[in-house]
Image 1 (tube, helix red, strand yellow):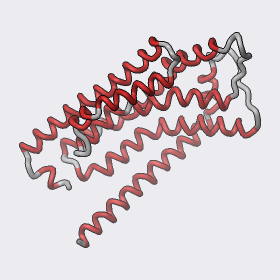
Image 2 (spheres, rainbow, N blue to C red):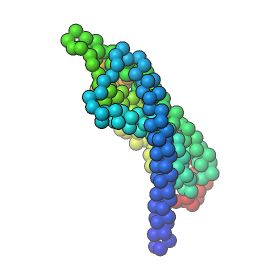
Image 3 (tube, rainbow, N blue to C red):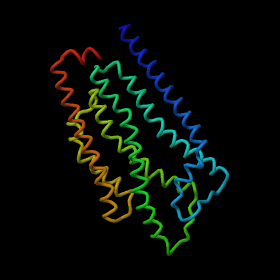
Image 4 (cartoon, rainbow, N blue to C red):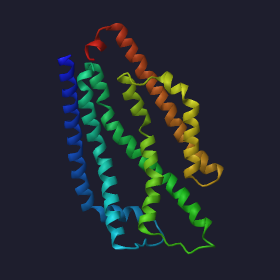
Length: 248
């Protein structure tokens, strides 16, 4: 019992260490983000036909903080994934360690890919539709705060959803998920993803279809990679019955 208690204490101590290291990287990149906020801001608004406005001094600080925070989150992802891998590493076999280490760059690339998909594909669709919708009724004048909230709503959800295949692989490799569970909830997942697609796109079939199909495709990829990892895991456990138990 004492050994078990010590094991729990050791795990909590290790987890705290990994979280602290991740937060250190986050604040380092946050500082860098503040230093390059003007350049990032210029890139984001370069295609806008109008200049954004602010309604008060606090809005300027809010924009700096949002841009620096998103920049920091994106840059911290590979380091956070590495810390997660180091935390679960003792419970993995040598083969699993080598395989799961590939998740570190994959998480970053998929998150960045989701951001790019939202920014370069979805955002122009939705923004153009909304601007044209009110062109004859209103004079368009966007505040910086509202515009950046809009950009975040159009990009961050896709960045998170694009992580699903890697998350499914990782959870399957450590035994917390399997493809059977993913297949059982497929119809509910489809419904949620379609609702998300319809909610964030203009009310026309082409836009809804353009967003829904990639999201459903990502879910199917998640099932496929989960099947692949699950079969390899079962095969390895049959060949080495005591291997998984030795790492618990």
